[in-house]
Each structure stands twice: as C-alpha cells, then as structure tokens.
Amino acid sequence: MKIAIGCDPNAAEFKFKLMDYIKTLGHECVDFGSGDPIYANTAIEVAESVAKGENDKGILICGTGIGMSIAANKVKGAYAALVSDVYQAQRAALSNDANIITMGALVTGIETGKLMTKAYLECRFDPGSRSYPKVQRIFEYEKG
Image (tube, rainbow, N blue to C red):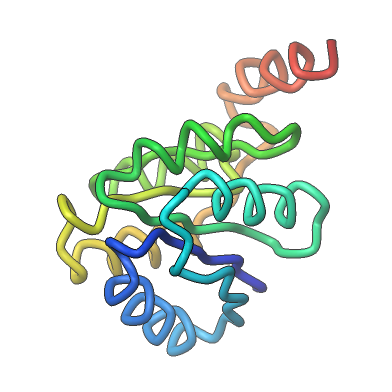
C-alpha cells in the first residue's frame, strides 16, 4: 500500500521512526513533511491525497492527534479516526472504514504507535458487516 504520512514539528522524530517501521511492513511512505507549525495545512494535504486516491491510506501525527483529526475530517472523502490503542486502530478500519488514522506523539509511545499502525494497515472494512449501514449513512450525509 501507499501510505501518506505527515505531522507537525512536535512529532517529527516519531514520524520518521514510524515511516521506517511502515517500510519494514512492505508499504511505501509518501512524506508530506513535518515542518509546518500549522498542523491543519499538513492534515488537509494528506487528507486530500487520500480522498483523491493518490494514496491508499493516511497517517497524521501531532502532539495529541486531536487537531489533525479535526482538520483532516473537513476534507470531503477523508475519514480520519483518532486512535490511542490497538483495538481502536483495528476498529477504525473494520467498523468505520477510516482511510486515515491520527495519533499523538506526546501521548503515545513509539512502540504503541507501531502496533496501532500495523493493526490498522492489516485490517479491511467488510461491506457485509453490521457496520455497513452505519458507515453508509455517513457517506450519504456527506453527499448532501
């Protein structure tokens, strides 16, 4: 898979370690940078690239992951889930069809970040699941 990844300056070291790990899993990383202190700029760029299909999934990191999640979710077609444990990372994909996860470098250790990323990337949304009608409602609302 091709993974878009970006962060704010608070999370640069975390992002680079995570990128190295993602590559060991056999995925390509597209780095959207870590220098912009206005995290919304990076979140929007990553979210747009995922929503357009230029990248398969996205990962955004800031201090807490909250701001990145809010900003990414403003982009039509972007579905970002803030995750703080492995189960949430799995459910982001399995139950919510999230195409982006966000996490906080100041509140999540890198080893937990790696585990969450691996779990997220291994899971796929099942359109036959009981979550399908719930997710479809989100898509329908977005269309207007």
